[in-house]
Length: 73
Image (cartoon, rainbow, N blue to C red; front, top):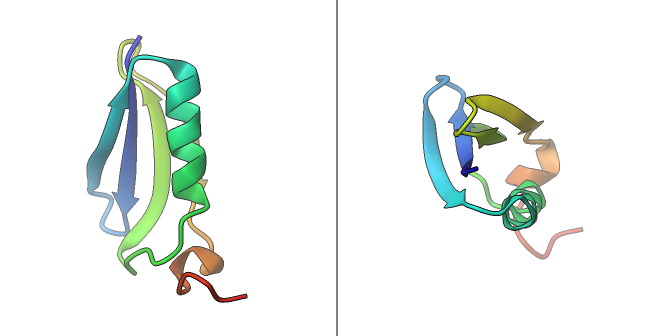
C-alpha cells in the first residue's frame, strides 16, 4: 500500500507533503505535522490517505495552537 499525507487548504485545494510505503512511517509523519506550529492561515487540515485503495484514513483539522509561533506556551 502507499500512504499519502496532504495539507488541505481553506479553498479545499490540497498539496501532497509526502508518500510512504509503510503505515508506521506515515503515522509518524502525520503525528509530526499535527503537532507542528507556524502553519499558514490558508492551511486548514492534514489528511492521511491510502492511495492504493483510495480511502482517507485520518484527517486532523488544525487548531489555534498550530498557527502560533514555535516556543510559545
